[in-house]
Length: 500
Image (tube, rainbow, N blue to C red; front, side, top):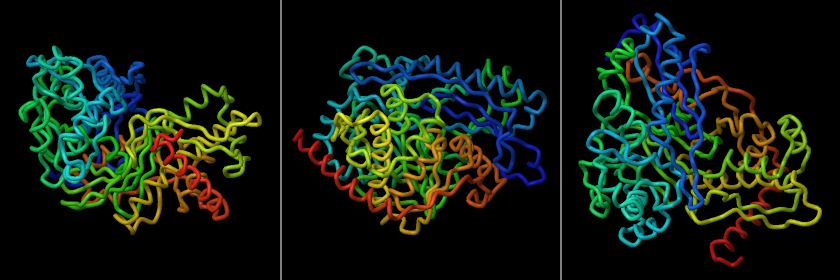
């Protein structure tokens, strides 16, 4: 599959990026630079229920994928025949059930769906939790597939019996495109069903769950792409018919690669709807520390870190609920003028439960210190600080694993539009933070991995990454935040002990 640089110099990579709030298609050149006029986007929102459901119709989302591909190809014109490969990034930890005819029998269940909390506790009673985490890199939590599968069997038994195969949305798309579904090591690694060191579905987990191994897709790596679209897509997209389509890759892995965090020297701090702090490193086998998750980019690269359910989601909720100024510039100026922890509030930001590092799905947001003097702006600033404190806990766990990390690169629309929040992060974490200059890190990461598979670049770590502003920690403010973090930890322990 390797091509010379001269052969590839005028070719392009088409990326499909399915995030938690939008579907995007983009074209990248051989330098992993996005072609500005060749992009398409469709926004959507997961449907929620009062019981904790977060889901979306698989076929409606698939139609959005078709729309963005069609639109990019139409804009390309004859240049679409310069597309050398297709790469896909999708959100981790999603699940959809398919019948024997290849039809979706269930909606797509998001990582944020917490209806399987009871089943997660039942799963915990049937397996050694420490060993499970050591093998799969996942914790026992409703975000992952074991509890979701148990919940569907219990809550929707008729639907469960109609499902012949369980897969992620990316696999579902490829089933439609190629008539077959395969699962990348990357997507499998975020399921809670995959043994990270053996790089195979975990037999001990499957023995407990009400599914068989043949109900999961065969595992492949990125260097084993699919080719040959089936009808009607072979005639719909002739330029994409015979080129390689890489299997879908986890969005978190792509985001790290795309933002320039491909080595242990750089931590990725991402705040979108949710939040994550991750590091990528090359290692075939790993002992996974408690409190962190561990997934894969591919067979050679691991991605380790922690995730927050409440990132940009918390900010959006606060802006709407507190009726804060709609002009972002006005709000930014107001919170920038405030001193660290000057509001006297302590917040646990668990609107959607806690993921890393404690993984308490039933945790809920708490505000301590409200008074008649408290203003909406105080609550908002305290919320931004509280998210930074959660990242500090993750960073502390990561340091022994990758002590060589020297910088943090921030990405995601939830934080890049707020210099004040970036400065808060730098002051809390006591490390310099660089704002990523990459607009779509997951999409760019998928393109870079495709370039590597094609043989255009030997080391994606050497590809130049655009960077934005640098935020240097203020040590005086850091000391104030240390005290505030101690108070937050005390409140957190009270919550764990049900003492309020």
